[in-house]
Image (tube, rainbow, N blue to C red; front, side):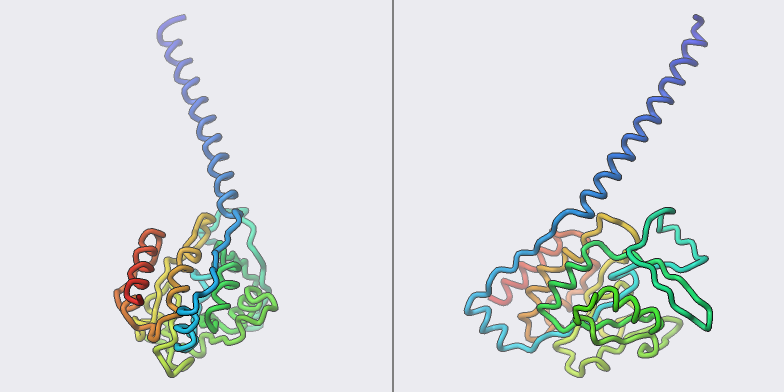
Length: 260
């Protein structure tokens, strides 16, 4: 065997082993994504102390306004290929609606842990859906997320938004005149630019199955219900989309120290 043929054989072996390693790595990552996506989650809600119960009785119940697309769900419709969605990824549900007399199918993907998130925050706040999407679509998505629980009864759609320089803005005062007790969770800063002190930003979500942004917000939201005014120190600090639990924990601890 010549040196040239030996090197050629060695190169082929290395290429073959590299392909095997890439395949095994892909299988491992896929398995880990499934484990993370379907792991059991439980936010422990301890009984309130007498002092906390008294504090809660002294403040108004807050109104949490929820955006839909890229905040709680992501969707695409017939004929629109979204590079964020891998081919073959099954949607959580499919909506069939008629727009301008044309039937359209929307493939909807739920943000990880959205069902659990809604079940928890519905115990703390009055929930309102406010989407810049058309009502025929937004109402169908809200119905699916509500799942006959009656937690998403109040809804606002595109016709309730204001078109401002090519983007839709949302008027929170139309939902609740007392701005001290209303806040919005939305991935689009333009939607709440008139109410920056009443907004909690969240990073846009498309299809990442390991996303935990909604879970990360629970400790913060739990403490927020004790505030007398949501425009206070927490929301006026110019929060960025909370991607890291440590970052969230710092905000939570600061709030507790201020409340003590």
